[in-house]
Structures are given as C-alpha cells and as structure tokens.
Image (cartoon, rainbow, N blue to C red; front, side, top):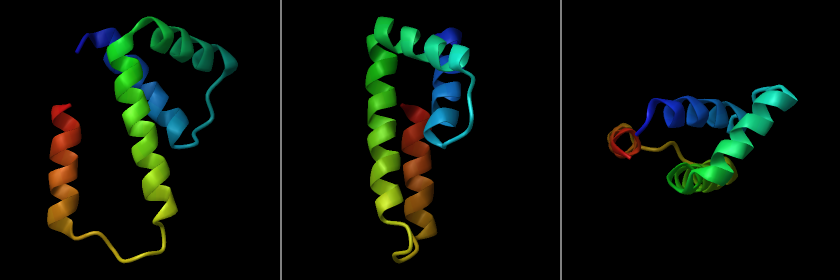
Length: 77
C-alpha cells in the first residue's frame, strides 16, 4: 500500500470513529477515495465492519482469541 493511501485511510478511520475532522480533511479523504479504487474498497469494507460491530454493542464480549485473529486479518489487508 502506498504511503499516501495509508495516511488517507488512517484519517478516514478517525472519521469512522466519529473523530472531528475539518471540512478540508474530509474533502481530501473523499477526493482520494474517489480516485483510488483500492482505498475506496478497503474503506467501504471497514465502514461496514464498524457499523456491524456498533449494532452489537452491549452483547456478549468477543473472545480474546477471536479479537486477535480479526486484528491480524485487518493488519494484513
């Protein structure tokens, strides 16, 4: 993954995590995602994952072994 892509996705994840970003930062993220199909795909998958897990809040705790496996898979993507 290109360094620019890494930087944009890190900021995009901040936005997904409901962190406050400036209008300029959000615009830069959107422009990059519009121009970079791999990042758009990765961002889309991550967004869906966040939405799905947010719906599960308050349910049974995820086993630590499963959390570690998910983290490893995300890092490899």
